[in-house]
Length: 462
Image (cartoon, rainbow, N blue to C red; front, side, top):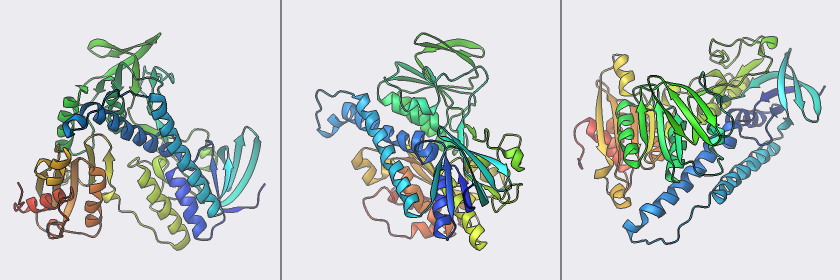
């Protein structure tokens, strides 16, 4: 058995590798265990990064095919080379993986390849194709992330019935793609394949899309996506999917089945804890399988901590990163902090959707009185010049104190614009604080300023 480490991190996703680097910076002898050949976890390998590469590429394709002519740019002979598009995506992933490997080496974090299993007492067994080894650590941090969920009667086969992993690498554009689930993952990947030529039908059990997103924003998004060609069937319960050759049949409760050639199952994610040895180590989970932790990310087992998707909450890479840093800093200094009320969330469709803080439903449920200011991108000069006039910015501020409680954006580059709001809320800004900050003209960020002004009914351009 190797000499004991100060910290062993199980899982090298966004939370795990960031925690390992921070631990090394603070003087801990650190090891990280990862069973996949590439580092970065789901986010880098088969999630955030490859999906964004395909979203960017597919947007360029659709614009050149349908919208360049409006700007006086005539394109002839345009062809889709899907293999090259996938090659670009894979290249991005490989480059970033190499970058993380370099960061671990730079910070003297020792990497072990294989599946880590807790044995109790600070010991971990690592199994790989090359054999089995054991290492020990004063502390262990579980950062194993999450995996796609499914539904009863639906068994992804890695081909015709796929999860987000398979949908990032299909070798041809589906003629008809049925997406089961109207959440973020389903809409983003559905957007990719619609842009490339697929007919896309989204089946959602709830009466609305994107639960958790501001209801007004979600309703606006649905209207825009329908104009783009996406078909939504809400309040729809899928009971099974069967495959015959290249055709899939999607069974629906109380309705005729749908036929298609690809099915994307996008009904959420669940914690990845299989064969981790949690029971042996004394690590408790809740009824949904999430690891239970206290405010310092300590599990029920002494010396064992957990962060990221595996402990629940918002399943976001940046949330896991922040938890990794906070956990390590609490270990080393006793101090570490995350403001869970202000974690930005972004949907990378077109237009993008972004939010930070509370939405109107949450404020109303909590009995908090607030004022809302709204400003449409159609009245923003930069958005108009760029031809991106869909959507709006909405600012919610406390009725008594004017402190900003939430900001919600649907519009081009919403994912970049939201961070002005996040920083403002972190420092307790009022809507007037945002409104009185000079914003450059012409910029999209002026829409945030105008929405803040609209809280007090004094927006200039609407």
